[in-house]
Picture (cartoon, rainbow over the protein chains, first blue to last red):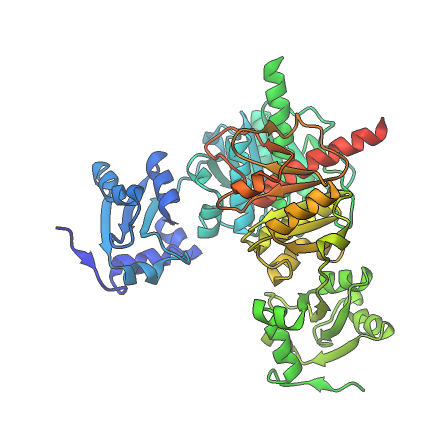
Length: 269
Length: 269
């Protein structure tokens, strides 16, 4: 019978809580995943899971109860904890009793294959919820991966992971800077299409290339001159009303699903 | 010379903090607005502002410095507070020194005019950030107003207000329940188009009527049977990849901007 951790001061539990902070994720190279859906996604998509932490008293659903066995079958270390201990690190209002420590998976630009397929690049994105929601839309639109430029927030922030709805395990991730992207683009001949509130083509009147990176600026400032210089084309979303821009993840979704629609129509031809 | 409030225990400051909670907003019928852009939006759009609270030491921009005069010109009560007092209620990381108490403005369904124009109805939406981002997209897509059904989160939650980027002052707002909406729809002959992950038309293959309400379900559960029964048509967003749905505000944006595009094309005809 597996021993149950009863103290929230246990070193393994302390390490878990550290993953909820940027510093802890940077030092360990791991990230924190919580909830039946996300832990299930991690198992299903073959994520590099270091540890699964569960509280058998909280695992009430059929799927929940299977998680410890699924983990053991894959020789993943498991920890059973009391509901009190689980609550001590849980980030959910109603904890479902399943969490995981998963190894981060970053690709170098040169190994990413970002010159093929549909990619999204976010420059200096600040809100992890926006990052996760954009990643989810990218996945839904048949995208391949996400490039984070410069001082972007962490794709493995718990809020980004939760908002990604599992696409954090399926989309490729690259972290780089503008200079390296410019150099790589020159060498690989990649096409970059930027979104821009100023002088630009209407996003529905442009024929998007098969292989491309959609580049978007930060929530506050949009694309900067050095990023605009990287773009082969600029598109904007025409709009009415009082606002002159959309939430970053919403804008990404609108453009990504136009690209998706064009691709589907091209397939039918 | 106007007296400066130096204590965060001042009754006016206590009242301000209460507006950050649902109960305080319900009791007062007011809401809390913070930041130069949003306070400026409230002034510009003629919102029913009860009070403007500023800290002259924090108002460093030209526009910021004008706010107290603009308020006095409109005979709005103003309070000058010390930076410490401002920080005691501020919800921003770097407070800009301007906040306002604004009266909530709800319309009854019968007085809303929701049978004309483009409206969005959200059933049981949980996340105020989603609500605000959806409202912003609705405004950008030329919409008229938002209907909140049943146990939806508060449109005047500070996070919703901030995410709306000023559209909280331009879009009409209605709060009602499913029964009242069904009854109103029958009387007024309104058209309701629902988004639905199951059997439904692809959102780009449907011709949206000129006057319509786009109805969307909650983040967790989507539309419920009683809401589906209200819909004249159901549409879905075809997608690929691992995820089978989008963030609520992202999904709303994708469909709203298809509707917007159809309207623009119809105008050109």
